[in-house]
Length: 251
Image 1 (tube, rainbow, N blue to C red):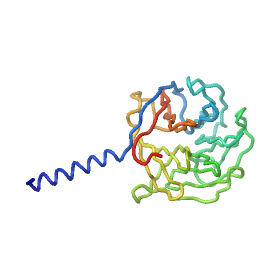
Image 2 (cartoon, helix red, strand yellow):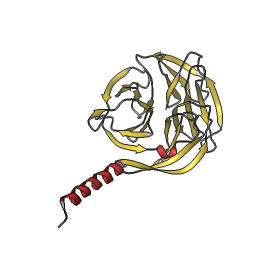
Image 3 (spheres, rainbow, N blue to C red):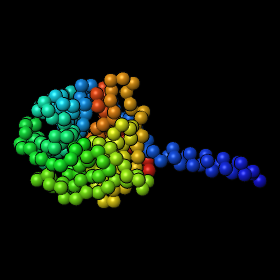
Image 4 (cartoon, rainbow, N blue to C red):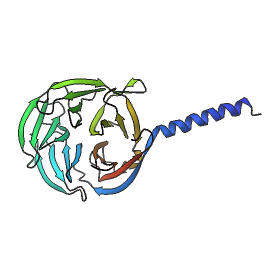
């Protein structure tokens, strides 16, 4: 018969194993060069074109990249006083939001030129399109739903993980009815059920973090259409990683 000490130890080891399994793993499939001057805020792959929005005042851009080489194909600058944030492609247009300027820029997808500007309240962090509506983050635990044409708010949901609000949701990607989000200042990507706001998966990407001291935080998620793969990168990172996520809750 095992002693109580061994029983306690077994319980602890089992708990540790469960905790280790709770953060799902990432498999690197390909490494693609990335412009280290790009303070990445938004990333989306559509029809073989990789769209990237970058930030910082005086440095914010909207650009297109070759997803196989990372080469910048086209680039337009935002006004000097604008701090670019997330982007999402909706049909023939691109929505690009700004951090504290309270302005969403609608762009022509082919030329990247501005079509119009729409104002909104609060901060802008990440944005994605689920096919019916836009979903936007503002640094809090709230995701706001918006009309893809007018940009008007139509509702919201509070995001929770383990019953607690999860804040600092940054770049967003809508895939298969779920929202994938970077969590600012962490190496984590979470998958969220927008109907309930609950985080269903947490992925640890710390193994991808560059050793370069000039590289900033993880930020940038682009689903590869027709696959279970994603392109991920970070602000001023030298690499875009093509990855596949493994672990709990994967559909």
